[in-house]
Image (cartoon, rainbow, N blue to C red; front, side):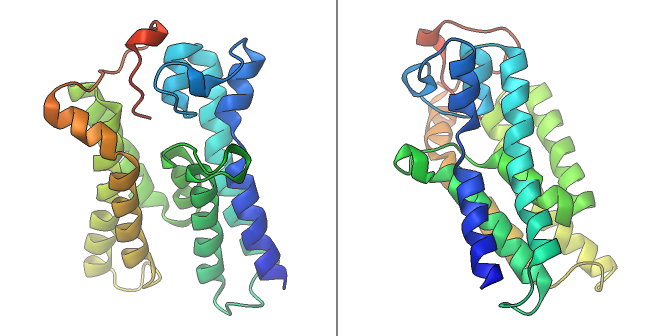
Length: 217
């Protein structure tokens, strides 16, 4: 029973639209009507500013982290192996961000919430993923490309690590990170189309007019 409540709580936590809330506090009544319409930190930064975007990033990451921490402390009765429950709770937090009940199931791309989930479970792989993201964006200035390649570096790092140290990670992490990489492709499908067409917006620390924004975060 506790595990089911934890999973529900994780989904509701993930569903909190911090991008919408923070943007509204800074004068944008509905971030979904500005720029790309995405509630993520990238659209907030381009449409509202850097500091609001930083707040959104931190809060979206916290959603994933808190879901996993709560599952680790209070769960374990239903699924037996606590690692399974932490992963399920984490994925429901990500799922909540992508399909939030509070916004008629139309949310963000889930990358920052996933970062919060995996930073508590796969510390080394997630830091490699962050490095991959930073290097990719620094070179290409495409946040979407950095997010996709960073997501794919997770299963690659987990796989290589298990070859070197087979007992380092729970066996469930490899298929789970592969699934997450597939989810990253799904949530960035419109960005991938723009990348292929050469229409994707490049990252800049400067806010842009709403007509110029094509969110990729």
